[in-house]
Image 1 (cartoon, each protein chain N blue to C red):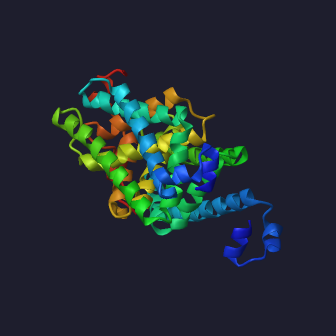
Image 2 (cartoon, each protein chain N blue to C red):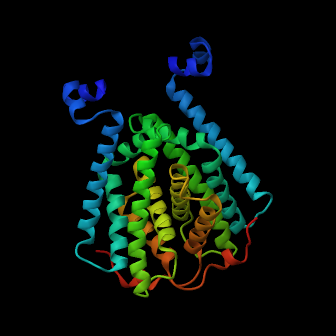
Length: 179
Length: 179
């Protein structure tokens, strides 16, 4: 708290007035970067109700955030570091992830009803799409030389739509039982 | 360094003899957890040369590591936290990720030659598969209540094989130009 107050140019008294402890600061930072992300995705989506376009907006918004707002992953990485030792932060993180999976799952369910996507469990699809976007964002953030935003965006969209595509699965998959 | 020496029950002199600084400790920790992961994946794969089975072993190995070896993500999260401020660690992380993409890309290329997977850029496929596995591992690690290893493994395998499946793309994808 002392260091945060110094870096922010605030007295410790003022900081303690707004935040009871370091955990409260981390939670506030997380809420702030998530609100920024939400706005960015909403801006990308515009007024469309189309499930495909909304998923594209999600991929574009998240990956753009990873390249343009370095503080996004800084906050998350710091947060994750703390969740490993702090049960309450772990619960907050789990709840946030569950909310995102439901949100993405809702878009997928809409696309299934419209006959655009195959019949998949929406929350499972939410987990897969969230994983893809998280994983690609991490590569964009930690390996900016290798990856260019536009190419990564196309890669993410392609993977999402292949996952949701109607039609037969790969032969590679059905031929090889686990083991 | 002082804190690490205390926690490890070593003198600072001994610690400095083996590691010049905190960065060296982090790099050694990263190498160790990556070697463990490599062994686990190799054990899962056994002697198979089949690209599909090798990708399954990769998914299974990484996700099992996320559930059974908590220190794996602890090391990575700590490492990522430092890469945001340390150029040399960022380079080491970028090099590690590039190596993994090439490794996975090599398996994919093998499957393409065998006619099992569609003709995709192997390194791009490596990025997508790595993203999926990273993202699902993070959900397993930070949300262990929601996810069960077996189900997550099937989810990951399904997503990987759908991504590599030969055949037409989703209509949802081709009908909706970006924007």
